[in-house]
Amino acid sequence: MKKLHLIIIATVSLAPICLCSAQTSSSASGGSTAPYNEGPVWDVTLVRTHAGMTDDYLKNLAGAYKTTSEEAKKQGIIMDYKILMGDASNKDDFDLMLMVQYKNMAALDGLRDKTDPIARKLIGSEDVMRQAAVKRGETRDILGTKTLREVTLK
Image (cartoon, rainbow, N blue to C red):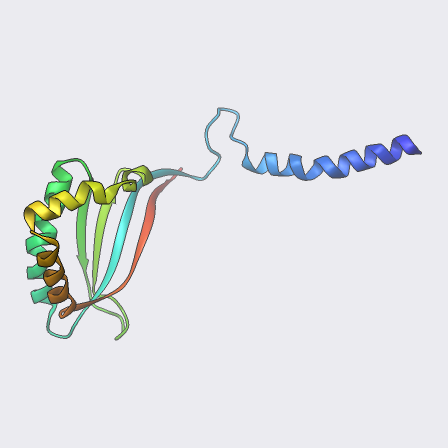
């Protein structure tokens, strides 16, 4: 009876460990069992431009945003950047999406140490950058930002 009691306790104690191990273990080949392959990482900013101000905002982006993004791309800090434009579905929706592509999550480590010198070189001092940010604020609202990983289904 005592031996049976010990077997039951051991089985009950080890079952959750085996179950967790089975759920997190890699496949027999040593790779992930996820139904997708991980790809690059995107920082996405959702923007709602003020009425009649979309062209003004895009003209602003054509200056500092484009030049700093091009330089960051040239230096290999980012892989790419895109701007998507569409109609807002309601008054609370975005009409522009700014997207910046990074090789992986590790590319975000120390990002400001890499991008601040570009901004200072191409835009100017912190005061100049702050004034530009205030001007952009007159033409748009930032509704949110997200960092997303691109995945490819297996």
